[in-house]
Image (tube, rainbow, N blue to C red; front, side, top):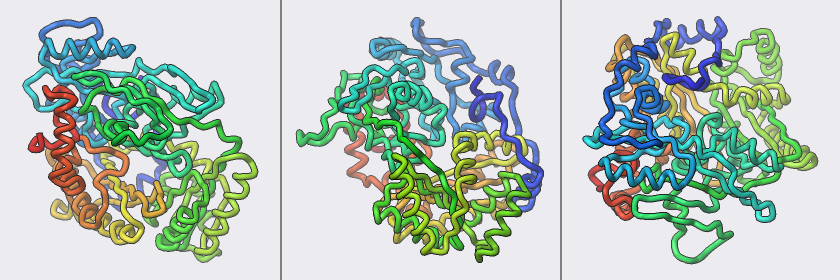
Length: 535
């Protein structure tokens, strides 16, 4: 069963080797056990529903309301683990088809409720949290709407109900020999509708594209009517209304179906590892590859601290000792940086592209170490989030943030954000272990993804103060260097204070006017994406 207060299935664990715990104690401080409220205690604290009527699609008992109360951000975990959830949905609806959602809109109007669309519950920026609102809150869980509705093999277009999760989507496509190729780290639980609503980017976006590259059309039910978006190959009939849905975060309505551009399953795919002497040489190599349009599917470069941390957390001291010896003989020391790259296509394409990638890496002193580490990364890429559960139990908190910016600004931004994170908790005498990697690449720039690890405080308020200080310091550093406040995580509530820096006052008014046009009563996911002062 899915965990109610952490990541993933409750029967999957991510054990830490003793060497990893010793390392964390050295860089952050001795562990102290993190709090965990028992399910029965948390369940007993769920207040009565404020909904004034019943509906056959809506559950108002405490269990589903608790399970749909929060997402996966650090503040969400603090609320769940310390049993300090300020608000719960008053009901959770489980529609099976589009007609059910139209019924739920009518029910919400009768009861004065606002609605929160809920996909896989994997948001890390507060997309699905009930707002501080006097109205009752109805969460609409779309997980039962997951069928492949139509497959046009001639046009390579597949239409799905929008609640389909990553594994279910891929399984239905693979049965016909196709793939969407969208693999975010949350792949096991996140949904197609959620990817579209947050402008998601999968780990192999270099080959398959971001979600906006594959989203061809669909249907959005809004409080004022249905918006149909035909999957034209191209159109000059005014602005592309698909862009209104992409990144809309449930503020305009509920996406019920989506038509996606799909590809035949690749004949071959390989994941490889290369070590570079430094962060700078690695950046030069991956920029050269992407600007030369070498058709790889993944380029993921870890900085030196992330590289060291990854190797230590992996365990296997004998293998790592042999690897370290090999790299030292090739002139790579403490500043070495790990690149994972993938090649996808037919057998000949994979062979040619692999050779090109390794040749470019060699020009920057890169040492190709084969496929073992690449295969290990691929095998564990959806398992890594389980590490958060283990670290919390030892008293360590983990948070992530990301941005995208031009190549020319990337080195300085990387250093500035890391410095901001490492110094943020100095007033409390706490240390922060922070590191980063470049993941999604473009000819003009790339995405930087930061991870910070620190000790939980003994009380929730102090832990949230730590998080707020870290988030604020890093966000200001990102904006100061011309980065976007969100490359793939969306806005939700956590990024609201910084949105005006990117959109401007005029842009926010445009978004607010759009929301009013689709949702004049403000019933759709209030408090997310659009600052209240813009409405």
